[in-house]
Length: 301
Image (tube, rainbow, N blue to C red; front, top):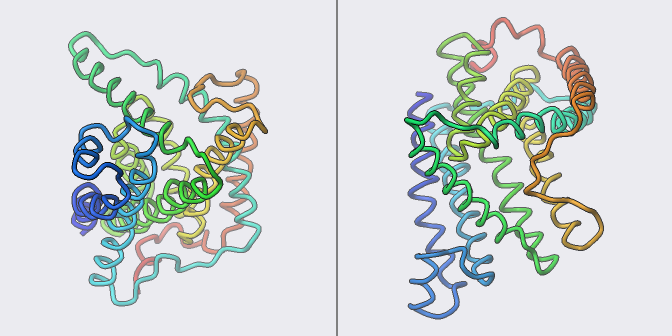
């Protein structure tokens, strides 16, 4: 059932959601039929395509990662409980600190992963992966180049809020939860879910840092039993970057989205110590820590 639900979510996101997203975006593409053809051929060629791209992405994510998974889960489980525990407010404060500190830890992984080289027999794959990375970076640059506060708000909803809810619902609330029920091995379930979470972004030069991030979200859900904590952590990670990008565009801060250079090693070690300490406190603070040895029972009715 885990793979079936995950497959339906991916089908909903990549195919059904994308088709619905295109239909919603059409009225916002200028130039009539010629404009639609140009948009379909090269959706990142004009700044005016920012709005239809955001609408298309938002509708696809909402349809594929929220609506379809919820319908599936409701159909399979009468008494659906994605958050059998409700975390105290202090857990959210600690989660905020853990995510911010983890960015410093993950920066060194981002730096190493972005410069990885494949063996000679995989050069074709490496070239394709680089081209795909460049295309995604171009699309990201377009949809995050805000010319007004209202476009920033739309981007905030599409890039931060919807993915935080949808991706955590699919990868933690559905896939990880069901794998734990099936295997009774929460650590294996967390890392499988994290690897798939990273893989579906199709950014191989950011695979490992995103997988580690997915594992962080997974353990927060595992320890707290509260999907809202994982959603909040995901939201903080995404929102921090987007807000910094917008503040940089306003000239208020100096921030380069494409800069993957990691801080000094001693800083990374300090971030790792602080992150580990906060996560240890969250683990001990969570109300259902005593249930960790019987994870399957946690998610039963």
